[in-house]
Length: 356
Image (cartoon, rainbow, N blue to C red; front, side, top):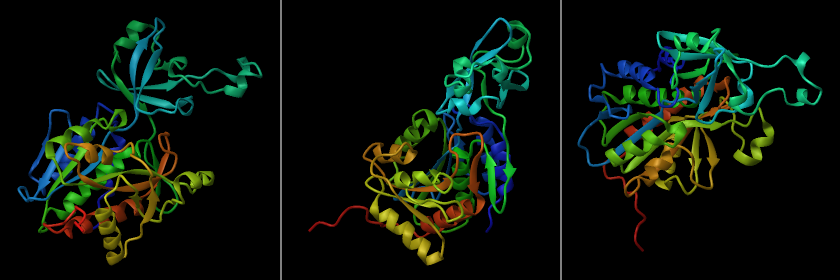
């Protein structure tokens, strides 16, 4: 069964800045509801779906749906808008970018204004892009604060206005693949497994507000209380910036999803993923991670008495930029791997070390 990348294309076209994910979540819910009727939103906005309810071994499959973005926090007398960051924005990258607000009556378009080089001293030209958002005014075309307030308000969210751009082969550039690609993958796994006989209870979560503290991962892991957690997120590719290989290993687009290795990840689960990949001839990559990570694998690991967790990541170039790049084939292989691995989980999988 091939996945429907048209759904991914629609998903990344929808702004889902952290704390404002609902429109993207509704699209995912619509893609699932015919095959996965046990589907609901919780009070925080996390989308949850379940297969084979009541099985003793509970598995949580999570991918967060939020992306980094902005929020209006000041409008000056001349109608220029100033924004604060939602998540880990690299400020110099947004200079001269387009921005789209989720305005009062629909999309409101603007640009991050920059100072002409003609007006800069030689020293100022060494640092053209500001490093603080408060130093970059957003121009939405308004001439006064009152005029701007007809379109946007304090608290209005926004994202950089860049969309799906096909590159060579199966590569695609877009803002916000971190981590709507993960949310898409976990939903596709649910569709693959919807009519299969599972040995476990499978709980899918597309979570909210990961970018500001793993919020949805923490609350859903507490409620579901899984024994096993699979987190699907993006991972750093080091093929474009080769100097990063000593930091993160040799990770390349098109070579398959990344399986995380290290103390955070349960050896039984990583072995199971690797054996499944070998059995089904699915290409994958490995990354050693020496400490806890900033993904929802960490949230599941620490919730209640702690789930045994594994991480499957999609190699990503230019993370937290307006032009993140992935390989669609890597995403397809992640869906293949996770679907096969979850289907093969036994009901009595032993996660504890044997006593001597």
